[in-house]
Length: 369
Image (cartoon, rainbow, N blue to C red; front, top):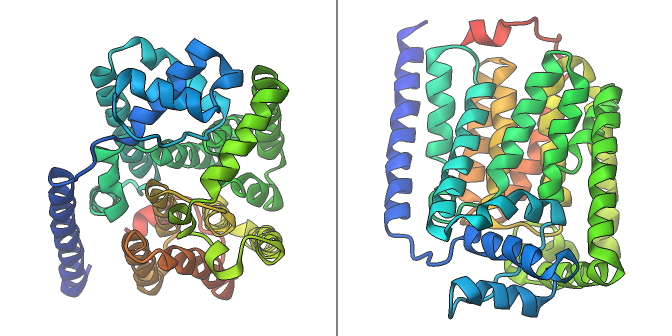
């Protein structure tokens, strides 16, 4: 390794250390009084007390919130029923303890995802860990405990299982994404286009079971309430800032754009099928970001997964530099929401423009690191 390469590595880690300190400052001075988990906890408790069919009634969610947090505002939870089922055991634990357990679990999920996706070298593992600690949206992990890290971990595990030829298990793991379906909705279809049929069938089967179980638990009335609450949540202008809706409107033009993006995601994934699952999953994630009708700030942590996956594939200093720019765009997207769309659109286009590359031989990325 040349002296300049060593200096560049030190500079990158120094920059990450500085931004990590900034994140720590953000956590310490955060005005957040009611973390996301407070509403998750109340939501799961409402499902147990009132039944799944009533937990999407705004008055029920408000009553549940005030049962634990008198005077708190209502931040509606529109995650599907499996999310409430996942959290139900935590409602038997006092809220402060449950909050710590959930927060540590989400921090651990992102840390494990970074470790799994990092090439097996000391520098790479330090770099990947530093990259999420320094990522601006990641400070929300410590003050709000959003769900996105669990979906990022599911992508990392699915990648690991796919490369190990365990596609059925990979499909089952991907179904974890149904806890918040929009975050990675196009990833299974991207993998199907790339030839991972068993993975897709496994994911589709698990998804069908969860959807049918959810519908049965909600009933007709519960489904209507779920749709109504989801529509109300999706109309909030704050959550539309990271979507195409402000540019295209919430109508036919947006729907047509979503269809075209989904088709492009599938076609690009097919084109990149010989490069391994890394670029395919990356394209699926970026396509999912673009077709999202609405997002929350914590969802921006999804942008880490494509950067990590593509760093694994090598490609030289130019690609590393471009992925660095994508990381910076994701960091700034919390402040300038349009950058989330720019990064999500530019990544698949850049991959397609720079292809074909020979498929990487096993271990090459690790050796290049």
